[in-house]
Structure formats: structure tokens, C-alpha cells
Image (cartoon, rainbow, N blue to C red; front, side, top):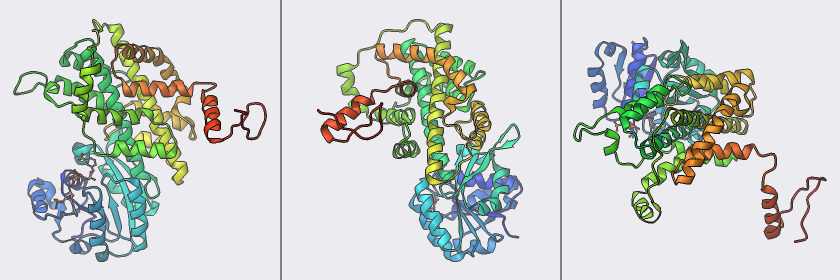
Amino acid sequence: KQADIAVIGMAVMGRNLALNMAEKGFTVAIYNRTVERVDEVIAEAGPLAERLIPCRALEHLRDLVKPARPILMMVKAGPAVDETIETLAPHLDAGDILIDAGNANFRDTVRREKHVRSLGLQFLGIGVSGGEEGARHGPSIMSGGAREAYDRIAPVLTAISARFQGTPCSAYMGPDGAGHFVKTIHNGIEYADMQMIAEIYGLLRYGHGLAPAAIADVFERWSSGPLDSYLIEITARALRATDAETGGPLVDVIVDSAGQKGTGRWSAIEALDLGVPASAIVAAVDARGISALRALRAKIVARFGAEPASRGTATDAVIADYEKALIGGKILAYAQGFSVLNAASAEHKWNLPLAEVARIWRAGCIIRSAFLDRIAAAYDRTADLETILLDPGLSDLMADCLPAMRKVVGEAALEGRPLPALSAGLAYLHALAQARTTADLTQAQRDIFGAHGFERTDKPGSFHGAW
Ligand code: NBP
């Protein structure tokens, strides 16, 4: 018996993907550098074990998998992927397909794709979102690489992916690094979405003095409106949880310093490199950075940390404003994320299917939400939409939320409360909405100190001022 596919890397993600494949009827050869893990997985697989074939040395995979062999690597991102490729490649045949399903930087994927192709093999870089639960029961899958290699394994990916109202959340994004790039921007948007939710939590908690459980009620109510999403759902769950030791809210015993693995930062870097504003995403990355500066924060608090006055009761009207501010912020974060995708698509000639991107994010991934349906519809209406802010449906929703967003951000600034992502999003919209910017002055300054010249509004050419 030969396997339909191999999975290398039996840590959390790889083992759950392999079990997911087995459950969908595929036979899977499994390998892990520390081979005991392979036997562990088989011992714990129950009835699915009969579709798992243990592989205890990489050079055996060739005999264990049906050609052309799809071999999916789910090992730690970085050098582990290169090492696995180098060890495995000499034992494979032309046309076999190496798949990196980890969180690779798309630039590594571009490099690896070229290298693996030069060895006569095929390479796919696929972004898999949804964590452990997604890997086991249905992730969102963003694939990049040669189309014919993708077509060969598409049935497996489609079968194991999440479903949104029956539609699989797995699709071909484009050549080489396209899949991993889309996954990176997914994570960038995830950072902004999470940060904005946390900012509104901060207002309710520290502005109005609401208890976490009461705030959980608010988020739960929002779950049945336009904000309905996995992140809002887990926010309510997080705020409802109590600590077994103290009996108090669990959030209160968690150290307020956020971790990050780099994909949010990559999104910000790529946006800056492309010259596309992604200020809400950048602000979210910075907010995590500032949270980690605990010792410095303690010193700044001593000098500038006056306790802002209470905001009083969180009335229904106030809570309605917060909901709208969050919806507005969400639209702006997505507008920025999709603008980065749009620019990268042109830059790398990927021809990213943006409606499809929105569709495969509707289930299986961390930012999954019904809201993405609106973005898919926007790109379906206008494939070359410059920004979702120009879509009639989304711009109406944004306009409806704007007064509340201005009020919430403005009041918070006056009180000295930080809303970095929400205010960055709002400033982005305000900046885009200027008929005439103040860059005329910037150009004048540049001409004075650097003789960079400027264009005139009334005639063509390059000019200098008589400074
Ligand atoms: P880890 O990222 O913790 O990686 C552990 C796996 O990599 C083990 O199987 C380990 O083998 C193997 N490995 C290492 Br470390 N160095 C190796 C090497 N030089 N050669 C071969 N194998 C090596 O596992 P994970 O959390 O399952 O994540 C896998 C990938 O999926 C990562 O790229 C991650 O960023 C991505 N991802 C993770 C999540 C998540 O929620 N965890 C979500 C989405 C994507 P060993 O057992 O011998 O040490």
C-alpha cells in the first residue's frame, strides 16, 4: 500500500493535518525528525491509524508515496525547511512536489521555489491558518506555486479545508510566494483586528469600570451583528473566564505583554517597502512592542500616567458608538490589508484573486467572519477595485460608522487614553479624504534644503523657488 501524500513534522500542526487527511479518506505517510513522535501519533490515532503509514527515515519516503509524490513539510519555519529540502531532494524523482505548509516568509518561498525547480522537483508554498483546531478540522488554505503542481494536490487541500456554507476555504493564489504572502497579510489584519478589539475593551474596562464578565456580555451581543466573527467570540470567552487560583477574572492575572512571532511585522515591512499605507497594522505591531516595554512603561507612568477621569456609565448609546467605532476600524484595517495585497500582486505579477482571498478567509482562519462576505462581494462587483472604501456597500457602512469613530477616538485623545490602531485607521481615512494635502509645504522644505524641485499646479515642468 502506498500513501497519497506524505506529511513531515509531527508537532501540533503537522500531526493534526495528517489526521485530517486520513479522516477525509487519504492514506498519509508520516515522518518526524525525532522518530518516536511518529509512533506516538499512530498510537493515538484510533481508527484513523489504518490510513497512516509510518516513515522512520526520509530516504524511505520515495517507496512509501505514490508518484508524483506530494510531500508536505510542516516543520519549524526557517532553516528547518531548507535542511529538510536538502536531505530529502536527493531521494526524490523529477516531478515530485515539495510543499512548505509552515509560516514561511514569502521571500524564502520565492527563493526555495526557484531552487527546488532547479533540482527538477516542484515546490508549493501554502499558508495554513486556523491553529491546531483548524489543522485538525478544517483550516483556511492559501496556495502558491506552479499551477500544475497545485492542481495535483488540490483535491487533498480542498477536502481538508474549512467550509463556509459549503464552499471550501482553499484556493490557488498565484505563483511562487503568493500563498505565503497572502497568509502574512492575513496575520497583519489579524493583529489590527485584535488590537482594535483590545482598545475598545480598554475603554469599557478602564474608562467605564465595567467588570470583564459584563464586557463579555457586550461582545456576545455584538456577535449577532456586523462584528460577528471568531475573534469577537473568543474575546467574550476570554473575558468570561475565571482564574482557578484567585477566583477572579483570568485576564487580570495575565501579564500585559504581548508576544509575536513575526508575521505581523512582516506585513508592516512589506507594506512600507511597497509604499502602501498600512498604519493600523503598523500601530498594532507597535502596540505589542510597547506592551513588552514593561520596565520603561513603569517609568513613564510615574511622569505622565495621570489616571484619566471615569467615563461614567456605559449607556446603550455609548456602547452603540463603540460598536460602530469597531466596525469602522475593521473596515479600515481590511482596506489597508487588501491594498497591500493589491500592490504586491502588481509588483510580483501574481494576479491575486482578491474576491477569492476574502472568500477563503470566511471560515477556518483566525480572522474568519461573515464581514468578509461583504469584501468578496465588493471584488466580485469590481475586480479591479482600487480600495474597498470605494465599494458602494462598504463605503456606506464606513460613512455610517464615521461619526461614532470620530467621537470615540477624539474623546479618548482628550482623556489621554491610547487607541493606537483605531486612531491610525481614522487618520488614514482623514488623510485620504483630503482634496489638497499639506505636502505643498513639504515640497517647499525639500526644495530649500535639498534643491529637490517641485511641480507647479498651473503649468508642467520642474521648478525651484527663489528661497
Ligand atoms: P513547530 O514550529 O514547533 O516545529 C516543530 C517541528 O519542526 C517538529 O516536528 C520538529 O521536529 C521539526 N523540526 C525542527 Br524544530 N527542526 C527541524 C529540522 N532541522 N529538520 C526537520 N524537522 C525539524 O511546529 P508547529 O507549531 O506544528 O508549527 C509548524 C509550522 O506551522 C510552523 O511554520 C508554524 O509557524 C506554522 N503554523 C503554526 C500554527 C500554530 O498554531 N502552531 C498555526 C499556523 C501555522 P522534532 O520533533 O524532531 O523537534
